[in-house]
Length: 256
Ligand SMILES: NC(=O)c1ccc[n+]([C@@H]2O[C@H](COP(=O)([O-])OP(=O)(O)OC[C@H]3O[C@@H](n4cnc5c(N)ncnc54)[C@H](O)[C@@H]3O)[C@@H](O)[C@H]2O)c1
Image (cartoon, rainbow, N blue to C red; front, side, top):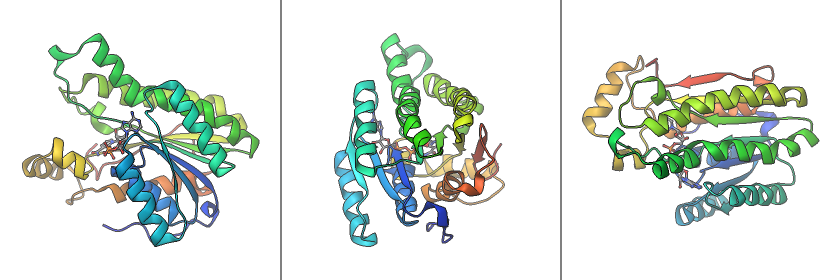
């Protein structure tokens, strides 16, 4: 699968911040925006993978995306990373809240601490990054915030109670932020991916059998990959979706 060939002229030189951009879907998004000529910064906890991505894109595109190392579960670190992104890019018109960790947790194993940890890595920083970046968007006339949810919360999956709660919460957060920020011309939408076969998903959770079963449920009979999220994200970032806010866009090959 390759990145979309289409160019969105308004994304050229636009300041874009992606969380969790070091690997998986986030890395495809960083590359997708960079190949549109956007000025890209990304935040991630995984330093080696992130530096390797920044090095590769610097060589291939002639422009190095700005990597900011931070643990987004720490609200102070998340705010500092947002400030570093603003300092590096000057202006930010697009924020993609993508970082997450879909740990499995059987019902009986959930503790107060593991519940809080899951919501911290899967939900809390979506709010605090939006809170930190929205004033800068307002100053430059508006912007687009794109929040990564998941169809997982609608599929009755038994082993992800806290992750599913966080992903459902992202829909509520998206709608509330859209209501608050709309008067400032800041649009807020969510993307709900289906089963996206990344290296990590294959390593940790997926088998050939589970991939085949999901393909059976999809209308489109092919494996979905990280690059499949790039086009929808570019569209939501671009002025092409200028009247669209408070919406949830499902990209799952037709499962739901
Ligand atoms: N892959 C799928 O099938 C799928 C399906 C539905 C939704 N999603 C959602 O799409 C988004 C991307 O998923 P993915 O599969 O690429 O995930 P991934 O685990 O491959 O990548 C997530 C990135 O976030 C980073 N990250 C994790 N914890 C962090 C922290 N505390 N601070 C900073 N960075 C941190 C990781 O290092 C990684 O680079 C997530 O929001 C996920 O919930 C994925």
